[in-house]
Length: 184
Image (tube, rainbow, N blue to C red; front, side, top):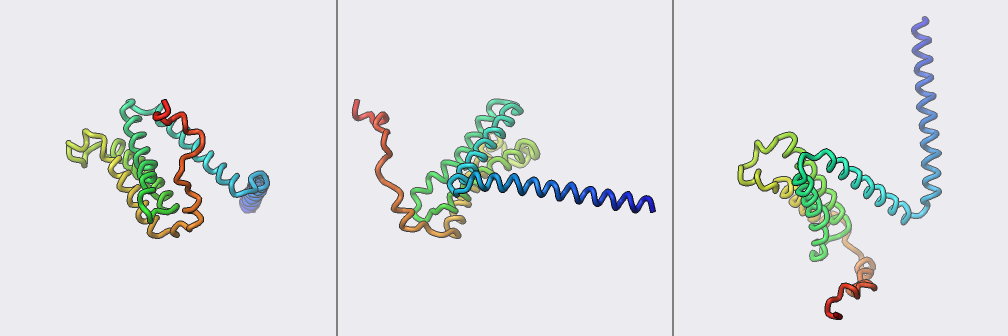
């Protein structure tokens, strides 16, 4: 009988703690929702969170890397797969927002995950020697993943509306005169 009452008290205490946590989280979320009431502020918070998280993860990786070459090659692969391929999407008329986002996400994920697999799990045991010595294995996977994401996302996602396309200006932004070398 004593064991049953201890179990009931433990369950009651656990449910009370769980209920208190949920109540506190709901209050915190309501404060954030009031503070970030507009969609633009929510997007800015999301972008800032991702940027800070990426910088933090990059710093942790750089401090734990075995060589500077690893940091350089991984960052080059991430930039190529996550930024260059989505940037080249401006030359493809069927590219849309979903395709570009999926391209960046799959390029980053393919690059980083295959880097971990290649250098920390398989340790070059599956590649031909000419490819293992070039540091290109995971970069190739990242670029192919990025292109795959761009194509699939653009074909599945909604095409850009004429209003969205009209918002893109073919003229450069103001204040870029300092980069014009013809004025010197």
